[in-house]
Image (cartoon, rainbow, N blue to C red):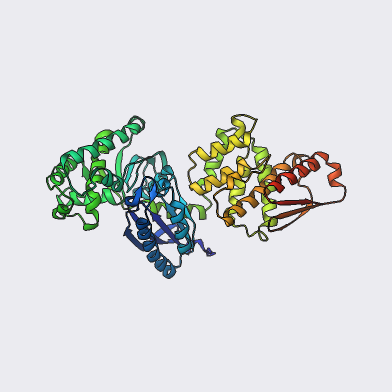
Amino acid sequence: MAVKNSKEDTLIGAVDLGSNSFHLLVARVKHGEMRPVVSHREKVQLAAGLQNGVLSDDAMARGLNCISQFRQILDSAQPDMLRVVGTNTFRAAKNGAVFEDAAATMLRQRIEVISGREEARLIYLGVAHSLADDDEARLVVDIGGGSTEFIIGERFESKLLESLYMGCVSYREQFFPNGELTVRQFEKAYQSASLEVLTIRNTYRNKGWSEAVGSAGTLNAIARVLGENNEQGLISRQGLEDLKATVCSIRSFEGLKEVPGLKSHRRSTFVPGLAICCALFDTLGVEEMRVSSGGLREGMVYDLMGRMAHEDVRERTVTAMMKRCDVDQGTAIRVEQFGNYLYNKTREAWCLSDADGELLSWAARLHEVGLSIAHSQFHKHGQYLIKNADLPGFSQTEQKALAILVRCHRRKLSVEPFTGMVEEERQGLLRLCILLRLAVLFKYVIPVEGLPHFKVAVDDNCCTLSFEPGWLQKHPLTMAELEAEQRYSKDSGFVLSVT
């Protein structure tokens, strides 16, 4: 979608495809503030249709039906920017690409599957903007349908991020499959959650926090029920114990309709969510937690606002990785500059987007990160590092594409890393790969003579470089490397011509 020239009156859309519910938020950015315009939520329970890593047809149908409703809202609201993210169920589903492709067609926007820690970062961003701007450390928790995120942060910056594989929908399927409710079932869910939280207890308690804040539906539902009992919307340890005793005496999920303050759409996931909440309170030693209206979708909007203001967290992530891997700054900058030069020369003919240009710049800066492991096969080491690192701000799709570019920037141009991609995505990434390879090829010429003068012409899977008469003869090493590059490119079905 096109972006208006005025950043002071921009509509941003955020779609959160969660494991329990799908959320849509359209907000207006005005005077640096986010003002919600449209908010819509549907309980899809996608995680309930995930069996042995495969998403059922019924679950996908529920999800696509919801997205068709979102499409109608988006057509009416017409946001200038739109971001769509998938969370835990999409991370786990082996056939998630089937749903993602169908949803992307309906929304006319690619689905970004984000890692658990990236989900946690965005949740914290949304919560932090809903709270007072102070210097106190806070623990933020979000119990979702398939995972639970834990974050310790200060002001708007997260310090510790973790995502554990436990959620109110997945725990319902595992521990309460028939809608029956017994103390024994509750205890099994509680013990399982406690074991999960034990893996982070020491790290989080050593870091410490001044207050605990709950985000999203499950914790807000618990606070709402406790609020009916005059606890002012706070979640306390004693309140949880009393609530646990109450729900376990009811014996079935259907009987939860008698619980004051519990909405009907929350009944099927309330008890497993409560078990997880009790476990995290006891294991981490939380005494009291207040809840926040902010969450993932609000964090998505604030993250896009940051990108509009050239405060993209992905830039900081790339810079931090360069420092950790002791990347040669001068070489990285030269490759980036020449890559940008080639990108600007070819973007119109190859229909490259602004996002493509960003990806090429990041790959140029990170193309030598593998040298921190070994010189031999360093492009493969670089792919491994990027593919498996926590890269705040990057979706899994972006991270995979970045890793492929680094892997394919030198030596044989294998088609294997591109396997499984749709043709349009494969072709676009291959074109970026060709530009990066050329930028790397000239990195030893530029320090001596500056940018070489030549013309670039591209068409489909063909790139032609035309040099001034005699230039290549004066640079025999570059000529030899270009000849080798022609052979490498040919193996991938790409034609590189040099004249």
